[in-house]
Amino acid sequence: MTAILLYLAAGLLLITGLLRLFLGDANNADANTEPQSPHAFWPPDGSAAMRVARQLFGTEDWEYVQRLDSETLKRVFLKERTALALIWVAAARSEARALMRVHRTAASTSPHLNLRTELKIIYAYVGFLFYCALLEIVIRMRGPVALQSFVAFTDDCSIRLYEAVGQVFPLGEHRDGEWEKGASGRGGRT
Amino acid sequence: MERDGEMHSDTNAIRTARQDLRHRTLDKIVTPLERLIYLASLRDYRSGRYSHDGLAQRFSEPVAAAALRFEHVETFRSVAFASLQSIVEQVGDFLRGTDGVWAEGLKTWQSLEPYRVVVPVVEDGMAIRIFLSNIKVALAILATEQRSAP
Image (tube, rainbow over all chains, first blue to last red; front, top):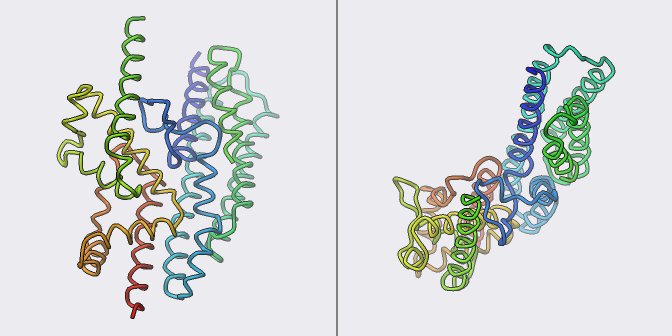
């Protein structure tokens, strides 16, 4: 029972974390909805995450700054965007760590541990951390401009991690709809 | 069941209040940045509550406050995630609107950063960071343009 509750908590944390990380910061509200919380503004179709990624890692703003033909402005822009991009990566990593902490707690008390699933989760987690580290190095070396594909790839790694953790989530117990809602929302973000 | 009905009714009232607010006021304000500044000005500095007498009279105070809050958040995000070029134009238009004190306005925005107060209370994370960063870069661009202007 405790394990089920912990997995439920992991699922909720995952959904909340993802909303905060990928959706909690972008896009317009649907004029036809009146959400009760700020996060309810975000449509579940992934457009918000795409806007954040486009803004931070896209080329439109950089092309505009280049047209201004000022080295000082280029430096100011790159400094600002690099700082933002690093915060974005740190937030992504932090959310994944929080998810793993909850998962570890749940796994330590669960009598139904599946070694293969656990290895898959560890593999996905390490892979995600690796790409986050790589992304961070690339951002520090050359700035965040034109890294959208890399970001999308890193985000795919996070999707794999969340899906792997989702495999041990008790889908058949109580919250089928809730998990599926979260999972489909996560999968379509970038 | 009754509670659901109330919530539905509130939701409809807020939606209508938002449409009313847009129709009567917001649509007449040209740029999203100016709309954002206007909406932020309707928020009490101490409590963070929104108030608009006309809207509250037509609907109710809580409905008016909720409508203003939603419009504020939505407008904020439309500015925060606009392209840098658009933000430069919007900030430039806004500061040029202050007749004859364009240079002074630019200096004030760079030093006092008054744009920080237009952030909605419920907003968090990357949107705020992106917004503040974009305004900062926009001001740097405008200052450079001003210096190089004949």
